[in-house]
Amino acid sequence: QVQFLESGGGLVQVGGSLRLSCAASGRTLSSYAMGWFREAPGKEREFVAAISWSGRSTYYLDSVKGRFTISRDNAKNTVYLQMNSLKPEDTAVYYCAAGLDYELGLTAVLYDHWGHGTQVTVSS
Image (cartoon, rainbow, N blue to C red; front, side, top):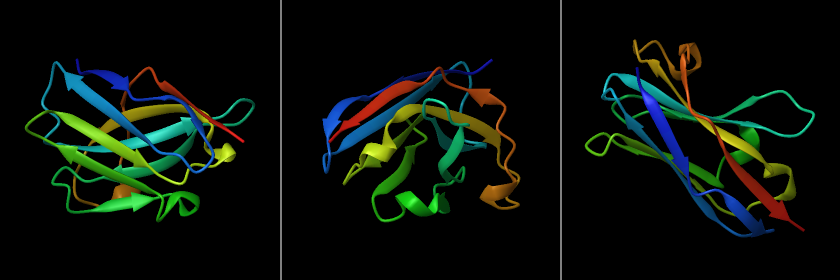
C-alpha cells in the first residue's frame, strides 16, 4: 500500500510562494499519474493539477494556470507543486493523490491513493 508524506504548507502573504512536496513510500510511483487537489472550508474538494507518469504531460485548473507548476522526480518517488503569486482564494488543505496512468489523458485518471493533506493559508 502506498503512503504519502506531504510537506511544505504554511502561512504566506498574498503574492508569496510555497512549494509543496509529496513523498511516497511503499510503492514506486513510476506507473502512476499524480495529482494535487485542494479543499477549502465549506467547499468540495477540487482538482488543481496533474502530471503523467513520465512527466511529459501536465494539466491544470484554469485559475492556477501560469501560477502553479507540478513536477515530479521518479527517482525520489516525489511530486511537487510550486505555487507562486498566491491569492487568498488558494487557501485550502492540499492533497496529493495517485492513480495508474493508462495514457488515456490526465482527465481520465482515477485517483485511488490519497495523502492526508497539508494546510496552505494565504493572508491578505
